[in-house]
Image (cartoon, rainbow, N blue to C red; front, top):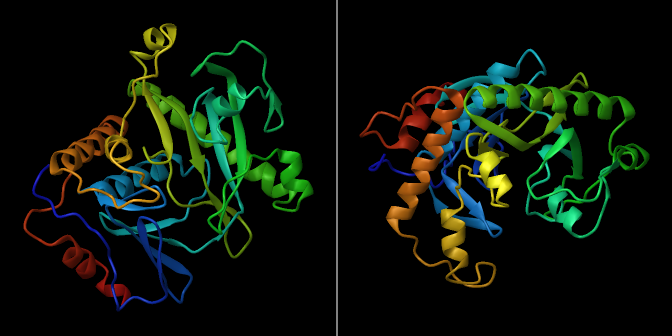
Amino acid sequence: MSGFQPIHEAVIAELPNYYRGKVRENYDLPDGRRIIIATDRLSAFDRAIASIPLKGQVLTQMARFWFEKTADLCPNHALEYPDPNVVVGQRLDILPVEFIVRGYLAGATGTSLLTLYKQGQREMYGARFPDGLRDNQALPEAIVTPTSKAFDGGHDEPLSAEEIMSSGLLTEAQWRTASGHALALFARGQAMARERGLILADTKYEFGTDREGRIVLADEIHTPDSSRYWFAATYPERFARGERPESFDKDFVRNWVAARCDPYKEPIPEIPDALIAQTTQVYIRAFETIAGRAFEPPAPGEAPLDRIRKNLARYF
């Protein structure tokens, strides 16, 4: 998939109320809809470090696949897809809690079960864990591990259901509805992933409320950027040997940069084209494995931003 122009940004002056996210450009329409354009920016180390051709299209189309496959379980924000990189959705008031559902003792962030477990914690997110669990071991059942959503750039903090309700972050009804949706979505995702020879180990959901106060699924769902997928065929042997499960490893670029500089303090070195191309292939492979169909790249020759602008002209 070489030769495709990456989308570094998608600033369209004719669209109103522009907001730039880490990887998405957002425009709020007066009628309560939001236009979300997925660029190809790769965010790491608190900044965009590269652009991966076709990444934005892959993520938009994968989220679309999952939104359509789970619409019977939970309402979602998606209304239409005028372009392969664009979703037009309902504008929501995003809940201040992220719903991470975990089926395995895994992860490397400060709020992951494995990190906290290795620190000696056994009471986490309102659940009790026994001694003797191993890295990447399956949990008896999937659990919701909510964290505070750090809107101001601060760090997410682990929470229990009781803390969420007692602090007023969510009402009891909101917690019950959103956590129920999260577990149902995860169960559907795990079952469908299993059919593709994959394990959906954990994932993140974001919810918001619409004008009527309904809980609605926002952002994206079950993409490689929001989820941890492992290959089922090699998991048992790797687990038995204490090795990390085989996954869609998109961290080539992050690891390459971190090995060559302090990415939080120093300039990012120029990233080789071969590394960028390899990462594109990983995203495409993830889509084709998960969705069970071939990825359809854009027609060659047309500049992607020109195509997006043309497809969004009716919203100007």
